[in-house]
Length: 278
Ligand SMILES: Nc1nc2[nH]c(SCC(=O)O)nc2c(=O)[nH]1
Image (tube, rainbow, N blue to C red; front, side):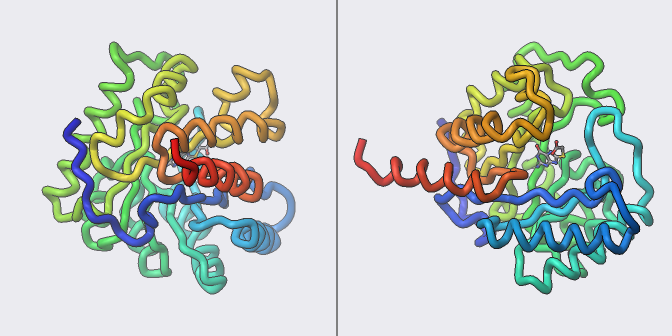
């Protein structure tokens, strides 16, 4: 295959899977209490994930769940910037989960180490902002938009279509001035995909290595796991760990997860087997 291994930005840590701990700072995530004790809870959660072994903390101020309402720039800035500043002071590596150029630039100024865009820099001004920041960026595939993406996801060949989209976005970023070494790609589990589409993408996750870039997998507690196990979102640890291992075995370089402590154990088991000769 035409795998072009490129030199990679240090944040991608070469050949050991990276654990990205999820820190949602949307109102429903730390629902009770005032904005300030919600912030304290977010920082405590970030601290715990760092203790538990997270390599990067992914901070997001816009819920991109199916049907989620849109968030204004100022609302999103107000949610994420104070948290980035505090988490940075803990010495953590931070990725900012946003599609808005203003949030990307402000987050970079506040100390973010990576951009994570579920819209693959497709919003107006986003690509220019990413180039200006010169930060590593994860490009994710989404079919449609959060409000409508799960209505009727349809592909003729989901794996090749998602791969082609990501290849096109990578080429566009490189042409705009982002070195390939900064880029990572993500098939976007649950973003405009049926269960079958998600399973196809997971089964053939290796295909995405053709781009020669780190592959990020975001499977943790997602509804695809609920569809298979019948478990509610707070009861999907076993399902999340199962797919985390499968994703690692299928080449995922970054795992975006809620349950950092448990996923670290899965990573250690995976690496122990890697070191044994076949
Ligand atoms: N790169 C990347 N970023 C994400 N942000 C979310 S938010 C929805 C949820 O966590 O359920 N998912 C993902 C994902 O899969 N990949």
